[in-house]
Image 1 (tube, rainbow, N blue to C red):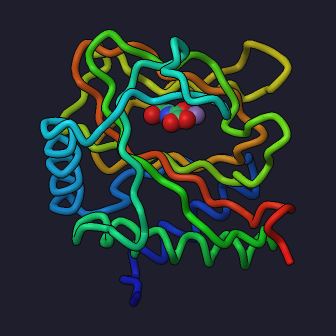
Image 2 (tube, rainbow, N blue to C red):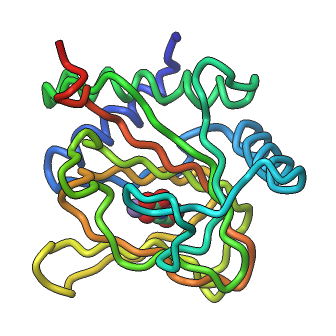
Image 3 (cartoon, helix red, strand yellow):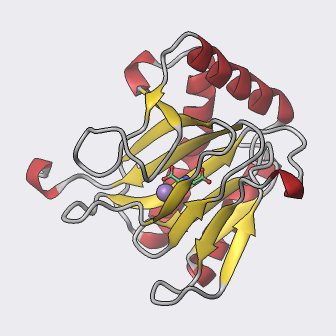
Length: 210
Ligand code: OGA
Ligand code: MN
């Protein structure tokens, strides 16, 4: 897909920040019309019970660690707006591969809706024994989010200590990118429904590699 000048600038600032500090936070990753369409698609999926309560780890029991509802984005069955999201993530995948030789070959992603009061406790995005998830990317879809509404993503910048942390508001258009193995993080409870897309750029798993 052709990139506009500003998408290229955003992509290179993400790569630069990930190189310098392991994570990046950018605003206005996608234009407001796309963000609105993604949000209403997520709400549509929730309303029609396509979303299911998220699970964690490799077992498939609903988790008390997290309270969100999710629906996976399948590349071969993507709706138009899901395809637009995927098309905007591809140049980022290419740029990350060029900069870090990560061999990222797949984006696994899902919509998430956290009902008011729910959270996701402190965790890492890699399963024990499974290290294919290399880069986590979270795109927020909430218009006019206020600090007092809670729901921040809290990132722990030092894996072995509780401090320092940064809190990122789930504001429409904000994208957070980080090295999946390096950052513990949690979703704080919010006073309002919280909508996002979480994606992971993955390498090929060893057992599938040829
Ligand atoms: C996740 C996650 C954070 C967020 O989906 O694994 O940590 O801010 N999400 O939604
Ligand atoms: Mn996570």
